[in-house]
Amino acid sequence: MMLTTSLYLSLALALGASAQSVADKVAALRIAPTSNDRIKLLNDNEFVFDFLHQSTGETNGAGGHTVAASSANFPAVVGNGMAMTIGFLGPCGINTPHVHPRATEFNFVVNGTLQAGLLVENGARFIFNELQPGQAAIFPRGAIHFEFNNGCEDALFVAAFNDEDPGVDQVAQRFFGLPPAIVNAAMGDIGVEQVAGLEAKIPDNIALGTDECLQRCGLKRPDQPTAQRQPRVSANALPAGFAGPAAPSSPPATATMSLPSLSPVPVQTVQAGGASVNGGASLTGPDGKPDPLVLGLLIAVCALGVGYLVLAVVWFVRSRRERQERTRGGVYFRTGAAFAPQGLEKSQPFEAYEGSHERVTPYDAPSGTA
View 1: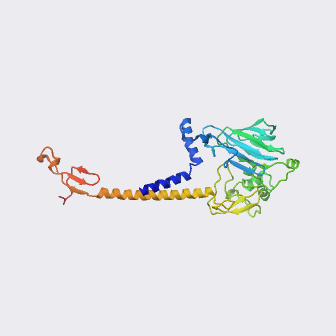
View 2: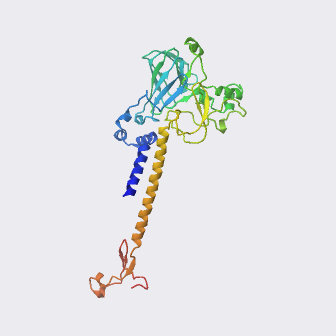
View 3: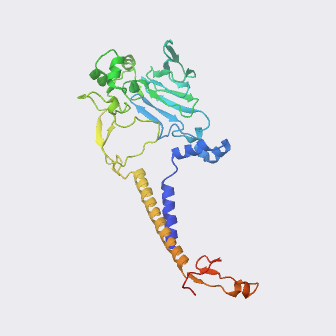
């Protein structure tokens, strides 16, 4: 009884601490045969996305931030063919040139004035508009486009997409993330060192915009974070001996939940103002207090370990008991005339085995048995 209680307690702790991940829920929604089946997989509150209080889907830069709701962090959009991003652009903030490889964007300006431009393909003219509050612009799928707040007040836009996973590629980071020799050739042989130097300066989105806007608004361009640069492998490595800042060795930030790392490998983080510091995994947050998320994960892992251990003990005890029952009292004997209802002369030599599963077979008993 105590063993069973401990098992259930361990499993309850594990299940309570490790909630179903977004990826698991999205996978279940994708294989659901009907829309009604998808609805059954979601709670009522999972149909609501709060753009103002989110820890997921956020992209930050010196000029503002965006918050995205897509299948990466909002499972309710699965099967509905749409996603949405809200852009919070500070004075002179620019949503740097980018493309959405799987969706067309319909961008609505809530407040402020935005300059928006796009290029669709080779040979197409550049399209430019200045959008006032209440106006919206269309950006075809795959078109290079940007949104720039050329004013000295905050601006807000709402971007709707016709795909639950629109994707996004920042043009500058991805272009300069190609092998430096290839970029150098595409830029007319400016030199791979020059290519590497330019790449190291590409600011994170949302970035600060033009010098003219900054001067007009009385702002100075500070050092901007560059954590969204393309990670480097041997095939696109920076030139040997490059003296600039190293490129990240892990994928750039995406619109997914960011969890604390338990790895002891040092990582580089960027503070406000562009200063970088080295740090590792820690059970405490920036305020020196225990990080509740890390502690919760540790408790979940420990509970799972205890649960698996208890399951192994239960299985071992049950298997041992079943083996003992199968082998207990196993003897051969003749059944006698009781199994010959037609009379003794009709009887046959039967063999019976008495154990956990009694069976009778019409064969002679093994030699030497009674």
